[in-house]
Image 1 (cartoon, rainbow, N blue to C red):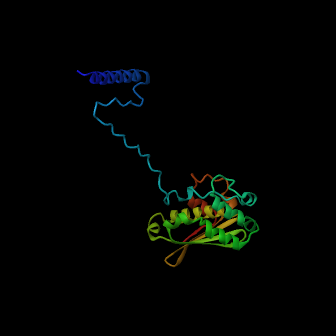
Image 2: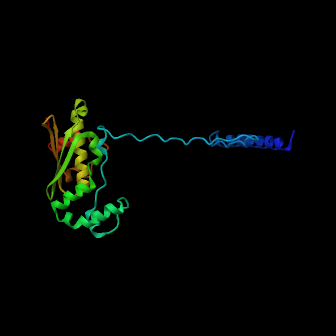
Length: 221
């Protein structure tokens, strides 16, 4: 037997003994070392372990998350991002518009809504979504319902959309309330006005969107 083969056997035997010792120490739970391959063989890398995907957003959890709030006072005071989250390009835009936004300028509100597009993530859940500033303290959004969501869990769908829209718009601009309306088949099927104060300090992971919307005067057709 050649010296090379003897060395390979000795290395394999040594690795087996080390694994046996490790098994005694760790109760059999530890990463397993790769044995030295025989001459001429190759070791294929193991494919990376795929992490489980996060649950997708649907009408059963739509209201539980929302955009990060824009601190317009910080945006006015700082020319570079102060929150560690906003891109420099977007922060520069906020900084430029902050004084007018804090003064309640409706044209500035409209420019921010167009640029930030706070409801962009919700387009899969509605045929059309619009938003506008009614006053310095109030925004309004109207969406056209998708038939597939109206067939099942109609009330949950309307309330989930209403609450999520309100949260995203309140996070975007310093208004006091957001009115959300829904249309389906050319008729009004939902309306609610969500005051900022009524949504403060809520744990939205455990909120019932239908009950909260009703607290905010929601009507379901």
